[in-house]
Length: 263
Ligand SMILES: Nc1ncnc2c1ncn2[C@@H]1O[C@H](COP(=O)(O)OP(=O)(O)OP(=O)(O)O)[C@@H](O)[C@H]1O
Image (cartoon, rainbow, N blue to C red; front, side, top):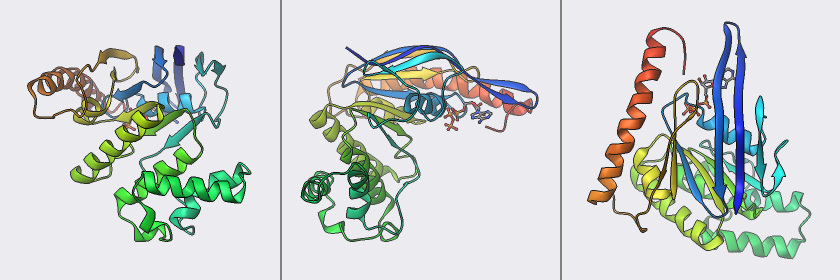
């Protein structure tokens, strides 16, 4: 069953010289429980598409439907995790996770139980009373994920959530996310620049073109998990995707040289 339906979506941004066509006729059908990565170089419209699914910025044309309902704005059915750890610095880890539950009006005992469950799920119990400034980047991003999971949205939207982390921390968060995904059965749309990250995580990788942003390729990743980045299959797919992304990166660089972009 389609969980996210993207139907003839276009997004144009007006600029002094005319307009930027960030997305052009995007059509995608994402199944419930599917893990999809949006891949491409800077400026190819990954965040624009994710923000449109989130309802932060509506398409110029076309429609997006999530769980059978047309997206017209943000909603509790879609949780978003950003690259920047969007935590409240004045709240402890536990309070940060609890915040959304309080807004939802969840009873105290139930909220306490939910926070404990999430702290355990993400291996953060001993960090419950720390403040974000006292945490590593990886830990902060765990809190950001827990905070979104607290709301139990069926769809998780993730905009380069691990982009600022070192390689080892990144791998451990990727593994954590895969565990959570297989346990909770969420639909995930995950934006990344990293070909390796996309192959490690996704059921399906959507490669976007640079200006206008269109679907260049829609690749199913059939490898069993956990995936071995050193395996021949992994490397064959990495080569194929590198070729596709490099073509778009070159178009991006040509636009930069022509002074057409600051992306
Ligand atoms: N508010 C805006 N006004 C004008 N142009 C915009 C605006 N937002 C995005 N764009 C342009 O739309 C295109 C797509 O941008 P977007 O941020 O979605 O790309 P991206 O693939 O997410 O890039 P990155 O990986 O660098 O975040 C870019 O060319 C960008 O310059």
